[in-house]
Image (cartoon, rainbow, N blue to C red; front, side, top):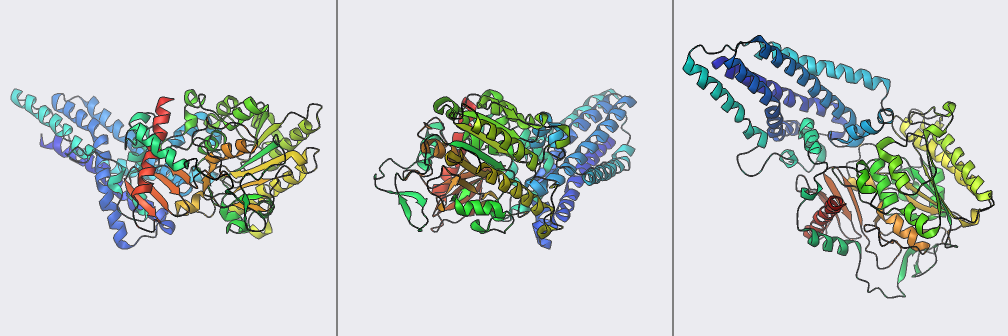
Length: 636
């Protein structure tokens, strides 16, 4: 019996010690962005210990049952089964930690189910960001971690032989005790003996989010994400659904009491707001060209206070209608597309595009334009349109055709993500030109171009001498140069005077790297440009987000947008100046006077700029928004 308990204890400690050891490893890998003191290293281990003990408990249940079996039967098969289990778990744990460390630098949060979604929809696209040295580093990491775990096991628990009791009485009570001890793992698994169970908030202790992330166990965050994917009705259940809906309506829309002579949100060339009702477009049926720019941020444009990395886009921003206080809905393209094209906010725990049966029931910008405006809609992307169920989403939204990698010649598929942006823009321009000069050119068109070259690994057929040795910025400069040629080419077409060009990033930017401020991360450009724009060299300072694009555009051309519940006409005086954005375990709300960033999983306010210090109004709004969003998903 003693040997059985000792073997069980060693296995539990094996997992725990490895989890503890990986925390300083993680902090060493990301030491340049975590900025931790000596005390912080110990605090990370201390505050993450309960979660480590919980995961160790999960992983020790099966060894406990196998050891119980060894007390009943002395067969060597049970020992072999235990050895195989430990070997497999060593590889799984190593894989989780290596994948987590590889992704954290780009994503800024610990591992969840997102990579699995990407891999299952398009393995090639999911691995497009991975370079050869990543594979080597990952293989070495997996070998070192799993090999280290196996060696610890072989020199401790594996050397302890468990023999069954020969006395009848002992044959009964020894397995019973072992089974009871295994059952007691429920205490570390739950994290307490009270009603409160283990959750992400147990590791949060610091105003520095990087330290909180370091304290998390990626195996637990992965498990937590896996069990919080589709049970939307029970997630973020802060209040009754009707109460949440009422709060969200007040948050997004002001009472309709704005005077007809109020000023517009648009600030003209003279620096003064334009009168309400000022026409933004020269036509009510413009040909719309929307360019969705991969990973572009406000920090690439001097007009938004950034560096001069994208001079072409910056010039368009100065000449067109620039939205200076605009925010990305989330952190990845699948979330961004749902916000831009469907006005659906990104849920923190999942992606709408995972659920074909749900997004097919939702209205979209393209669907409204096709149904109510008589538009033809076409989509252009150089990569795999099946990635993250994109093709299903676009087809459901009325796009026909959807041009993707399979429609390009093999010689043009030289980029990691398929056709580089130069080839993509060339293809899009040629087809837009054909439609503009066709005999039925009077039919209004929507053309959406989604770029991909400014994505990891930032390998592009371009070398700007200003960014030598800086591949990330060079990739943005490449896409900017392609965009400039494309926009200039559109100006040569016969429909140039009725063309509206919309330029927007797909999600929050990846330059500069490792921005700690969620507000800075999510700040992106939105620019309207082209001959159909009646208010050039103007700006909108009102806070807004990607979900507001649809209602704003549809309102401009006199089409209904009421079915797009989370979308508002930014230019209307009666629209609340507010932007909402999310990430895993985070929601942010921006208003002209107050800003709040809240972690709903840890129930912690991450940042607040409320002058009075009273965060309760925006905090209540953040909780209501999440509840309302998940209630909407649950009822689709």
